[in-house]
Image (cartoon, rainbow, N blue to C red; front, side, top):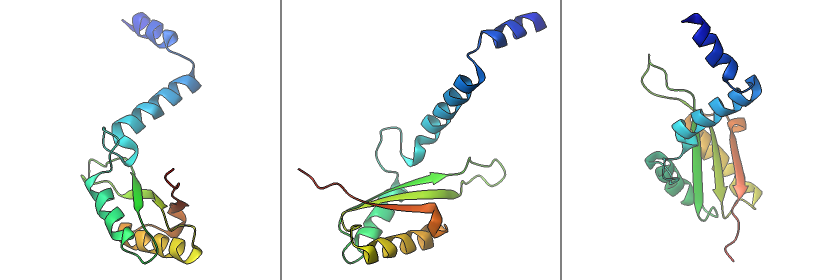
Length: 121
């Protein structure tokens, strides 16, 4: 029995490849802040609507990352957020988006990235 287990372990890819495979699987299972279909979650949609209402922000899209769900608490805490905004080219808008997201998600500002949305062609 032990010999079969050792043979299976030896047949596995090298450790770095295995780590990358496990991380990719975790991201796929967690959705990386997105649902399996690639659409925003209900919370991300709510945040996007709220942030879009900030003067000058324009259209916003939000992705939120969560820690691994704890079996003790049953809920996962946000660990980071990405905001893509049509108005993020304006430094004051960018700062307001970051501050609002930090308040809404309970994050530090250094856990939030804000980028300018690409213009439609």
